[in-house]
Amino acid sequence: MSPNEILEWFDQTPIDKMWSFDGCKPSDTGKWTHGYHRYPAKFIPQLVERLMDTYITNGSASVNDPFMGCGTTVVSAISRGFHASGTDINKVAHLVAGTKAIAIRPDYLEEKVKQFLSKIWHPEDGHTFFPCNQVEPYIPEKHLERIDYWFTEAARNELGKILTLIRSETDLDVQSFLLVSFSHILKTCSIWSQASTKPTRDLKKRPTLPYDAIKRHLLKMLKGNAAFYGVVPLQVKDNPDNYLNIQIGSAKAQPVPNSSVDLIVSSSPYVTSYEYADLHQLSTLWLDLADDLKAYKKEFIGTSYKRYEGKPLLSQIASNIVDKMVPKSRSKAKEIEAFFIDMQEVFNESFRILKPGGRCCYVIGNTKLKGVDILNAEAFAESLQYSGFKLDRLIKREIPLKILPQKRDEKTGRFASKDKADSEAYPTEYIVIGLKE
Image (cartoon, rainbow, N blue to C red; front, side, top):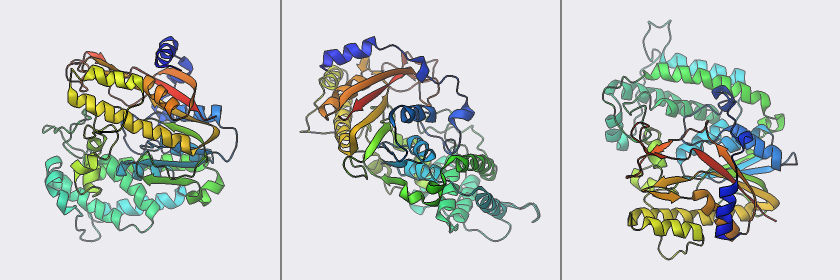
């Protein structure tokens, strides 16, 4: 299709109510292990499941997600007994996705969690915290200043002791389970503004006590694990390493051979929407996942730190977006150009790993930035063709259930509270489906 034909195709595609899943409750979208950890812009498992139902015809299929995030695609594939692969540059995402995809025997895990919680607080030991021994708090020294910026001294010390106990757990699957719970509670236990996706302090906030928060969340996670354990096929539970292949790394380099994947379901970062590394800053600090936050941020696709010189942007639709942004903001134009160049390389990799007859399904929304329409989805469709794909199908869906900021300030392009915003961001989104013939 030519750029004009693509634009017309998108313009004439109606919203498909079947793909809105507006009848799903939070208990449906957060089923199994999907509710283990908060994560921005995650799509719902029902979307992945329907795509698998539509496009997978064999019981030993391989499913990939190059931007696996917190693992919705990976978990959905594992639940069906499929092989699941993927990458994410975000180390917190890798921890969360890997933990969510492992089904642990419920009675064993419940006993482990009970033992862990009893080391923090035991009612028979005089109602004191950490009753059995003197626990030294583990606080990564090189991040102490940043941790002190976000946490009260009491919360910092209690969290540090909890982390010491987690690090002493010898079963690595259980340790990861505990670490994910620890990571999830950090925002509520800090003075990070609960309503903000940006790193903003709220000095009036009353943080949740760490023990209360982690106990409550672990009990929720135990229920999720038990439900997941009940659906994962026995051969996967017995040999998880044979079915799960995920790595910390670039979406441009998947850990699978040529022509080995049946289906790709993914949602890329959104260009200049927010810094994904910032959103997990607290976990990155406490779990000591990056020596230098600024250097770590530069590895992310969609970050404002990326620039390219000398790499051509093939999509005419993307080039037009960049050209329209130049008079508004030359630096933003460079960010957008870098984003679309990165995505070209991701689509090339998708083509490499898919079997003939396989499909890639990219979930993406459009937005407006500094008054310029950012036609992410149309640019993706054109770029997929340059990578060798045939444009197979376009689904337009409403997104009532996606955890995503919905409003922008048109002048700055930044996400804003609803009362201050004047521009919709992603009220609908597309699933752009490419076929490898």
